[in-house]
Length: 176
Image 1 (cartoon, rainbow, N blue to C red):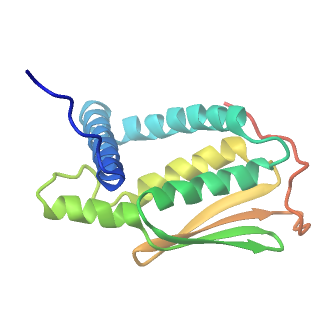
Image 2 (image 1 turned 45 degrees about the horizontal axis):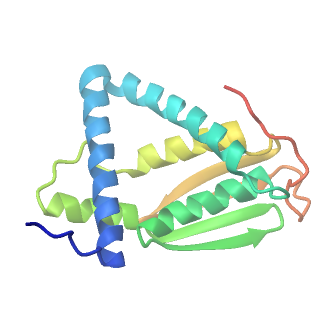
């Protein structure tokens, strides 16, 4: 007779989810690059950005700007990997400082453990994907950009209007 396994410790569970996500992402990257090369990765980023922007529209809390929602999602994504990330409101928008990227750290540990990585660094993919999501989702007067900084990056969401209260009233960008 077998018994049910004990529930996983929450820390073990989080680590297992990270590992499974990493494995699925690595498998998708390897497949797409192997079958379609760099053009396939570009097409994947465009499809992923469209799907994610549509999902964000359906999940955005009432009264929250698309830009604030996008930046909060990006911050939560980085925090999933224990990144050292802070959000700083600015007169023209928001600055998200990721001084130590947990995704990059996680991939370095995986590579050190013998895992074959498809991309030498996740940074270019992350930047291309998230700026493509932002281009489809945030308000039309907002520009989202990213700059590398050591083992981290700085994301900026800046309104051309620089109104101080963000672009909460602007329409969604939408698009395809």
